[in-house]
Each structure stands twice: as C-alpha cells, then as structure tokens.
Image 1: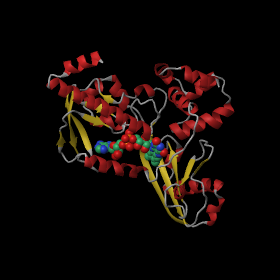
Image 2: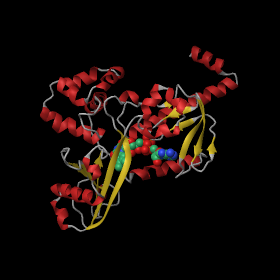
Image 3: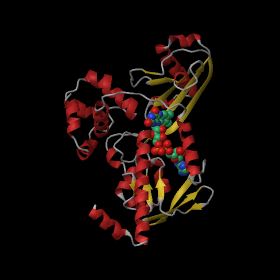
Image 4: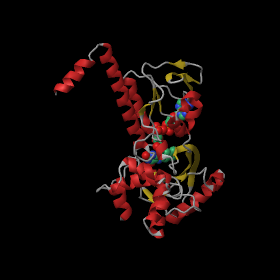
Length: 344
Ligand SMILES: Cc1cc2nc3c(=O)[nH]c(=O)nc-3n(C[C@H](O)[C@H](O)[C@H](O)COP(=O)(O)OP(=O)(O)OC[C@H]3O[C@@H](n4cnc5c(N)ncnc54)[C@H](O)[C@@H]3O)c2cc1C
C-alpha cells in the first residue's frame, strides 16, 4: 500500500529520478514482504518488463504500477490475428493516401551533415530524399550503424543507441485435438523454468472455435538467461513438460507440427538507467530533419505496441505542425494566425 501511495505522489520528473535504483531495492526500502515481491512484482517484472526484478528500473515499475492500480476495470484483449498481420490493414490505408509502401527494403545509413539529416540510403544503393525529414522507427540498438557518427556527439542520442535488446524464443505446438477452452494461462515464473504465459490461439482467433489446440509461448530475455543456449529440440522438450503441468492431457494428444522462432529483439531491456535514455518521440533537437518514433521512445509507457502507436501519433503531430508552420511562413500568414489566436 505504501508503495502504491508513493507512486501516486510522484510526477514524471520525480519518477525519472528513481531510474538509477532497481525495482527490488525500492520495494525492500518500503518493507514489501519477500513473499509478495516474489509472487507479484517479480512476476510483473518478467511478464511485462521482460527482465529480472533485480535489474528492472524502479522508475519503469512504479510508472506502470500507477497505470495498473489506477484502473477500475480490467479487460484483456487479444489481436484476432498474428502480430505481424496487424500491419496488413495499415498498408491499404497508406496506399489509398498515395504513400509508396516498400516491404523487405533495408536502410543502411542516414545521410546528411553534422547537424542535418537529409536522406536515407537503401541496401540497393538507392537514396531517398525526404521533403520534411526522416523518421527513425528502427529498434534503438540498431541505430548506431545507421546514424552519422557526428550525431552521436549528442549524449541523449548516444544513450538511446546503447539500449539493449531483449531476445525471445517463440514456440508453437499444433495438436490433433482440443486440449482446453482457455485463451491464456500463466505459470508462476522462476529463473530455472522456461516459460510463463501461454496462449491457445484456437480459442482466440474468430472462427477457430472448433479447431484443435494451437498453443504458443514465448521464452523471454533468452540472451541473458541460460535457456537461450538450448537447442530447438531441448526448447521444445522443456516447453512441452511445462505445458503438461497445466494440461496433462497433452501427453495423450498427437503433436502435428512445431515451430521455434528466435527473435533477436522483442523489446529493449528496461533495466536500471534506461528510462532516462528514451528519447522524446518526434523531432530531434540536435539533428535537423531527424525524427524519432518507436516503442522505445519516451512515451511514459512500457515498451509495447501501445507505446509504439503513441510514439507514431506524437511524431506525426510534430511533423504536421512543422509543415503547417512552414506553409504559413511561406505565405506570410504566421502573423495573422498569431493575431487571431490572440483575439480568441
Ligand atoms: C513474439 C512477440 C510477442 C509480443 N507480444 C506483445 C504483446 O502481446 N503486446 C504488446 O504490446 N507488445 C508485444 N510485443 C512487443 C511489440 O511487438 C513491440 O513493442 C512493437 O512491435 C514495437 O514496435 P516498433 O514499431 O517500435 O518496432 P518494431 O515493430 O520492432 O518495428 C521495427 C521495424 O524496423 C525494421 N527494421 C530493422 N532494421 C531495419 C533496417 N536497417 N532497414 C529497414 N527496416 C528495418 C524491422 O524489420 C521492423 O519491422 C511482442 C513482441 C514479440 C516479438
């Protein structure tokens, strides 16, 4: 309770001051019992923040704790498709707006001068020149290879490039029969186990109700844990054993197909000192023509899809404001706007 009251008493600036402390140290300062730390906060650290509570930034944890306890209604929503397919409707919307969408196109560097970004070079050698600017939405840890070295003279840009990726191993089992009617469930996480939250997509996707179980789980933060060294076969065996704790009937079912996918960066690791390294979404104040978006920007949310969407929304607002100002300036209308604003 004391931690919750404390969290609510803090402004965003005060929360950021806690970024140098680990979540576990803060909880112990407030005499939270070891049992509650293990049962609740360590689980939260792993499932939401994807890092051990000993490494998690106290700032990140308290900020989310405010959101979690500040809602009177809990609803858990699932995408009605794979995460990758969520993009599909956006492609049509963008094309209808006249945007050229290029898939499987790798950017190799951003072009410009000491304090200016004015282009992107693609792997093919082609150079794209923007009218207003370049929005960097790639994972922060990949940026140092793309940004010009002079731009890393900005301590805040340099700090963002030093965020570390959190790797996942995504595991899927296709069974020949329905094993549960639950859409998801979770095991209490411990460091020596592989898995935490499980999903049966046959109970999630619309129209799949009658289909046999299609079950998936993510092994989290695998580059920092010994599970990351397991072979695909060992991963499948270990996951299957943990699945059978909840669904013993799986032993009698036939596994039709399995898949193990290694994801190098699901999110960045929100460890001590990293909340302050998140750059504000929108225009860079150091490099003209450079914008930042992506879940790792300073959206006051954990790294997640909502954070990525908010960052995009914020960046485009800044972008359009800048364009509007430019048009008004060119037409010498800026004074009229200021006067009309003053009279309203
Ligand atoms: C298996 C899994 C499960 C997840 N589950 C959830 C969940 O349930 N809820 C949730 O909120 N979040 C979840 N996440 C996290 C979520 O996917 C991320 O927070 C979100 O995708 C971040 O969006 P983004 O646009 O910032 O970055 P990304 O989605 O990572 O987009 C960055 C893009 O840049 C591209 N790219 C990288 N380098 C280059 C280059 N040189 N040139 C061109 N393109 C490049 C990448 O291919 C990628 O498409 C999950 C992630 C994974 C992997």
